[in-house]
Length: 205
DNA sequence: TAGGCCATCTGGTCCT
DNA sequence: AGGACCAGATGGCCTA
Figure 1: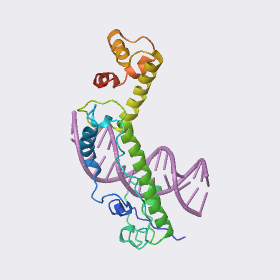
Figure 2: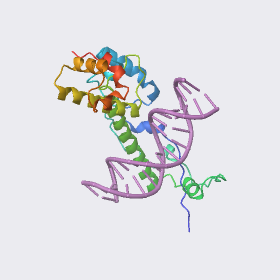
Figure 3: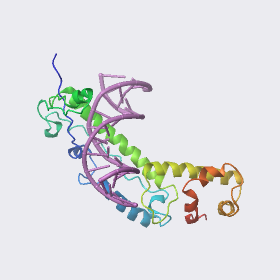
Figure 4: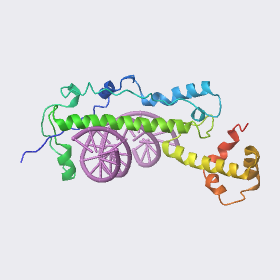
C-alpha cells in the first residue's frame, strides 16, 4: 500500500502574506510596549491594560485565498522520507513523516485550515485584549497573562455584583470590607484573588 | 537553566 | 463537504 508523505513545514512567517491588512513585519513581542503608549495616551487611567473602550489590537484582517496557490514555494517541497528518530512513538513518527506533494488537495486544505485557525486565535486574543482593558491593574503592572485576565475578571465581576446588591457607594463598600473584614461568604470570591490590592487604584468617581 | 507563557500546526469532532 | 472549535504537541521568547 502506498504511503502518503507529509511535511510539517512551519511556514508561519510566509503566511503573513495571507493577512491582507497585517504588516508582514509585525512582531507580537512588540505589542505590550505599543499598547502601553496607546492606552495611556488614550485614557490615562489605571494601567495600560485597563483603559475602558480601547480598540482591539488586531484589525479584522481580510483573508484572501488568492495566495493559496498550491505551487506557492512555501507550501512545501517534494515527497521525500526522513528517517525517524529512535525514541519517537511509531504512530506519531508515521504521521510526522508523511509528505504530500505541494499541490496535493489535502495540503491545500490543511494550509487553509491553518490560516482559519490563526485568524480564530487572533480574534480570541483580541477579545482578551479588550477584557484586559476592563479589569483593574496597577499602573506599573506588566501585561496580564490570559489565565490571570480570566481569573481577575471573574473576581472583579463578583465584586461589582456585590456592590450592586449592597446598594452602597462603591468606594465606601470596598473600604469597609477591607477595613472591617468581610461580612459574608461571597466576599471570599474576590477577596482571595489579586483584586483586593488593585482596588485602591480604582477611581470610583 | 527551568518554568511560564504564547503562537502555531495538527488531527479529531461537532455543527451547519 | 467545509468551517468552527478543541486539545495536544512543539518550539521560541522571556524572566527569576
